[in-house]
Amino acid sequence: MAAFAPARGRWRRRFRGTLWIHLLLIASILLIGFPLYYGFVISTQSMDEVIKVPQSLIPSSHMWENYTKIWDRLHMGQLLINSTIVALAVSIGKISISILSAFAIVFFNFRGKAVAFWLIFITLMLPVPVRIISTYQVVSALGWVDTYAGLTIPLIASATATFLFRQFYLTIPDQLVDAAKIDGAGPLRFLWSILLPNSGANIAALFVVMFIYGWNQYLWPLMVTNSENMRVVVTGIAATVPTGTQPPEWNLVMAAAMMALLPPVLVVIFLQRWFVHGLFEPEK
Amino acid sequence: MRRSIFENRWLPYVLIAPQLIVVLVFFFWPAFDSLRLSFFKVAPFGDREIFAGLDNFVELLTDPAYGRSVLNSFIFSLGVTTLGLAVSLCLASLANQKLRGLTFYRTAVLWTYGIAPPVSGIIWLFIFHPSYGMLPYLLSMVTTYDFNWLLQGWIAMLLVICAAAWAHLGYNIAFFLAGLQTIPVSVMDAARVDGAGGFRLFRSIIFPLLSPVTFFLFIMNMVFSFFETFGIIHAVTQGGPGDTTTIMVYKTYVDGFVNLRMGYSAAQSVILMALVIALTVVQFKYTERKVTY
Image (cartoon, rainbow over all chains, first blue to last red; front, top):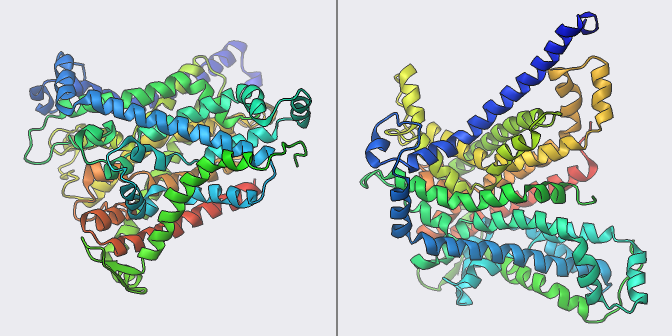
């Protein structure tokens, strides 16, 4: 049918086809972004504006006031520092120990290699919630409650990262290894000068995933921290939700939520090119 | 099989040691200890452990509250998975076409990957807030039904499902987009030449070719909603009203850390462990073989 339509009509139909898609996409993006926008608008309003339903959907003038108020009350600076330390330690730690173990598994033969590989693999089946009490007891016995070590080290094993690096190392041609050997390079030299410089895309992708994993931890920090100044931002703001008898300071809660949300979202936005490529097309 | 390897007697052990130590100390030892504890009753504050055989498990299986938490977990997980996959598949298919401004569109959906589930929970809690929220206000204009999650369990469940699905949307879309890129352009073009367009193209070409990704995401979403959403429940509903949003992980935490029933909580951990092992095995079995298409 289309082939017989006059040229102009066909053109219009095609244009209408993509216009449809653009409109649908924009509508979905607005819908997906609405909760964030709503939260942001609330964070700029005074309490009087917040409790007057329906609230205005245009940002108000109390942003600075709300943000500084909740910043001081929650010691937000300390919370953000703690979250940054945890997210960086977890992501860098996971990536480092996974590079080393994948290197050992791919480029060496040693007794117990298969067992080691399976032990790492099985950790996929042991997320924090299935071993809550006992992991807490181990950390407590080590005297790591309320320490950065306790917050991070139990989280830094990574089967996923080990597999990803193993897959990548397996694609390294044997000739490259032989050439390095002939040139007199030892294994560590090979790792440092040949493998690492070629792992950039994988490392960047994993960094995004692991940074967000670390930043967004909730159950584990909730258990291993007692003191206010060891809290991370996600557990810190969850404690601000007003209950029945407290004043409904939702503007302050939303201001805190926005501050907790911004760093990981920025990491996704700025590193998304590496994140999408390195994770899903590792062979490229 | 790789033939060129380095010869060294001790170096590989040094290299793999950090990972193995963490794995053994913080994963295996606690897992075995949970297994052991599940056969004991532990005095709340003391170190006294009394062997109880299968008592904890028998009590769990006959406890209606535990049965409800299992049911809640499945309702919650299937809700999060269905909602999340449906929305992200539609969006990813739309954003996969050759369009102007594609990079912008992708960024505009991928950012949700960064949202922490509890933060999402807090935002949705306000949207659903019976006194101040937008949603009850809008609904009050069309119905007199009291849309109050503090009173109605199903609304509380809907609230946490929305929060979890929203926080996981970016992850799903990222995988669907990657999956769509593996569909050869020639296949799509051939289908178009044969007159397939729009929905027909989606149903006959895109959806079947995406089934491995969809299956993978189904499992990952189930794992996510079972094991990574504790923060939403803890920060938003505390399992309530009543125990309508008490999912298994939340109950395990409450029984262990609040009610201090270590053995009972450990038994629940063991059941969760069996569940995650089952999910992982299913995933590996089927993704290795690829889902048929």
